[in-house]
Amino acid sequence: MALVKVLSPNLFAGAGFRKLDAGQVYEVDDSVAKIWIAAGQAEESKEKKGENVVFEVATQSAPLNTDLTGIQKQLDEALDQVKALTDEAEAKDKAHADALASETKRADEAEAALAAATKKDK
Image: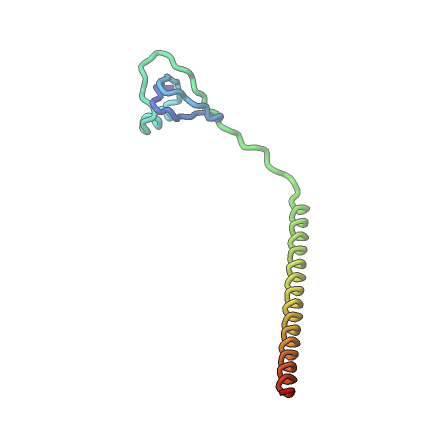
């Protein structure tokens, strides 16, 4: 363990990211002290006592043993519904486009007939 005096105002340590105060002396592991000193965030201290900073290592959580086949089945069903709705929407768009085209053709024919009738009357 090494005693270091914190120089940086923004230094956090430990599993809970506890903020370390600048100017305070802390007792940390030698490897951590070397890293902080090399980074210029702390300097080695000659004081006799400092607050101990404990670095905790998080353990791996228990493995997830849930059956994912049910979720996959729901996802597949949802994707099938999305595909069906997309196909339906595209079919409706095509039907609307066809209806618009036929109405446009009918309107053009009516205008042509009106123009022809007007021309005959003159």
